[in-house]
Length: 229
Image 1 (tube, rainbow, N blue to C red):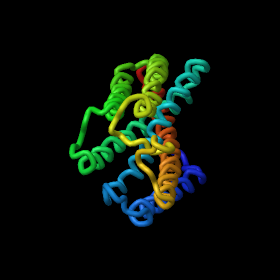
Image 2 (image 1 turned 180 degrees about the vertical axis):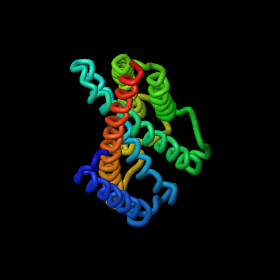
Image 3 (image 1 turned 30 degrees about the vertical axis):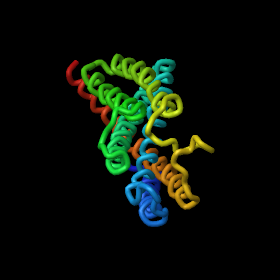
Image 4 (image 1 turned 60 degrees about the vertical axis):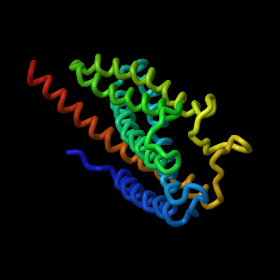
């Protein structure tokens, strides 16, 4: 049985603390938005989860390249952890976006370019796990996963850039002048950037846990292979 590292225990506690602070900043500290009202408070978590989701997909592509170069299974474990955690966060992003869209756009969903690419990205990574599970050989599975993660990783920058490339009703949060369709007050910016920080900490914490779980799963799989030989 693996003993949880001290740093991971500290990170567990830190994740709870920063989530609590971020919740306070979003629900209490940040002022109510003049047009959308209180539903705009969803925005802080919506952006925070989208941030770590997209970063995780890019990270998975990077670890996929590392695996193909080194053939070291630790990169496969990291890749799987990144995709799994990011897929969950990105699903939360889509759900929160729908909650925000209902009063703001009078619909739960619209096939806006940003929303469409986000849905496609989520489906790509759900398929990642379904296809991986159909491959029994660990090395073939890791090789397939690496190539898939590299190709799938292209969807992350596309999803991020689409509102800057096409006309879309989805607001641009970070920008200047006429490009900034969702202006933020100083207090809103505090809540916004702290949410990015908080979800980054939570992402790293969950990634670490998932990597440790992946290591145990790999040992169990090796034992099964030895027994079946």
